[in-house]
Every structure is written in structure tokens, then in C-alpha cells.
Image (cartoon, rainbow, N blue to C red; front, side, top):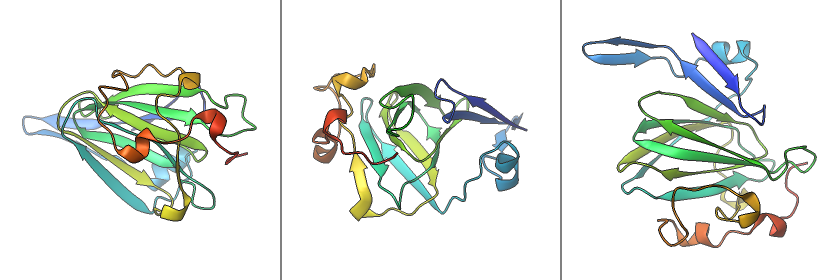
Length: 185
């Protein structure tokens, strides 16, 4: 059974699938197009991505792709835990510039659905964290974009400081929200 729960920004959804457990562990179906469509999530995923982060406090993001390669994402944690963050970049939205932060971990198996029009990133909360996500557009380097993760205007309560965060030089130099041109209407 597929349970879908809308968050404070209703387009962002937590998805929970049933797990069948026994003395060996568990089995679960994490995605079936028809079940998602029945819940109103009509996305044709075309690429799977996976990241591994060895250390606690690794920050990846906040990333997005510009149209026509904008991506919807379905994110889940295979091992470890993350604070997953999405920021609304849709200028016409009442929630433009607002964010949602949720903890995802391998124990609960919850997934986060993020539609197009949002920046996405996360911070690892446990060592050896592996994150898996499906996207509905292929990676297009020429349309790659990002938002500075620690922009004070976003008021995101990250579990690490800018000094403690382990991240790429590229992510450290991303623009703040007020420096970002309109991307999504």
C-alpha cells in the first residue's frame, strides 16, 4: 500500500510504502508507476542517481536544473540518515523562497517527492550515508543551477555550521536567493 502525505508546501510529499518483514529483514516495493499515478503523482522517471557520503555533516546542494531540463525527484535513503531540504523557486507561488526540511533515513524507508521548480539539497546525519533518487529528466550540465545552502534569507536550520560543513567548492560559491534570476514562474 502506498501512503502519500502532503507537507506544508502541498506539492512536496512524503511517501511511505509497506514493508514485509521477517527474520531475514524486509522487502518493499519503492516505486510502481500505476500506484503513484493513482495518488496523483504523474511522473515519468528516466534516470536513477545515487550518492555516498562517508562523513557526518556532508552537505550536497541546494541544486536544480533550469528548464527545459528541470527535474522532479523521488529521494530515499538506502543507509544512514539525512536532513533533506527543498526551497520553492517558483516566483508565482505563495511559498516562493520558503523551505521544507525533513529527516529521511533508511530505517523508516520514507521517500520525498519534489516536483519541478524547487532547489534540493541535504546534510548527512550519520556516517556512510547512501542516498538514492529518481529524476524525470537526464542530467544536463549546461542547465545545472544552485542556491547557496546557508543563505540567511532562507532561515534553514542546518545541523552544521558553514565551517563544519563538508562540501564541494562549487556548492560553497552558489548564489543567494536575491542574486538568483527568475527561473521558474
